[in-house]
Length: 452
Image (cartoon, rainbow, N blue to C red; front, top):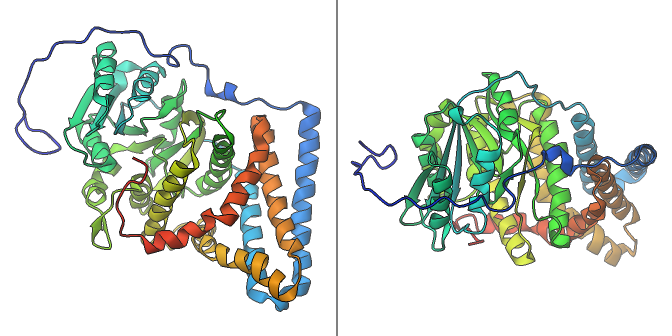
């Protein structure tokens, strides 16, 4: 037999079986993911709806009122109006979103987990895949150990003792997540590939639901919905929970209307295997500025498929993921994500104009506006107050209104009390993270992962 990945002759070696041990905590008896949400009382929903409509009215009024002073600062005001229209359009479009219907589609599925140094979570991740409920006769699971220096491989073997059908691939040296995802795709015999991060956990019924969109032959991939697993740790994790929910349920939902989801996250997404194999070599050996791409694997794969196929989002296919609990690790993660976003912005810009006009215009706006944002904010919050001695009340008011809008939207949809941490995200974004785009440009040739 020849290895489908390295194309070298394979040899057979016997190894003693480990005794099966009970599943780790958090695997058995998992509730349906919908139970993670709680609707406020009817009175509160009515009040929130009224308040959200009021906020929308205020936001529109501020934009229209700003037209009176348009020519005093035409570029700043044009940017402000464009951002306001873009954000409000996301909420408007997402209101028409509907998840792909359950048509009873049940293909063979290979769930692939590629990881490095994840001894604390990999056992639970694999256990939740097998406990998720998809028929085991149609399920493959491939776990790839990418040169871990901790006990990740041992934890995988413990999982294999419980689930003998589990395929474990061990890279003796670190090759990168993209190689782990690729070997899983080549080993799999199934029709659909589901990629799950090693610190992400599926809810019951997640696989069955996420593959429903692939019943349409024009669809190459479907992004599932992911919430934060460790949400209760501190303000940072709560803030990320608000950000995750809005980015999925508003931004991806709006994109999904036109089959143009810009990124299928590695946390939990499904791909048609034939489509992935068609671009696998190009994706695996992707170069940018003369160097191999070693991060942004999910966005790169999405873009290569989006060129010729539709990409959807399913908010009923639920999972959770562990997010950074310390600001240092979070900053490095965001910088890595920003670099991949900048790289793929150049590549996707070549073909997005061929998509639906609304999707195309929205995408180009979403790529240009964040790069201009720091300059506009610096002008509004620093230059104007110092030179004209004017408090930027309209600018600050507009930002606060939009932040309150999306925070209350999160509260109405989830019932979670930490909606206020949306303001933490906006404050940190304005003061720090908005500037990362320029740093990403300056360090595009860096290939380090950053958080390992």
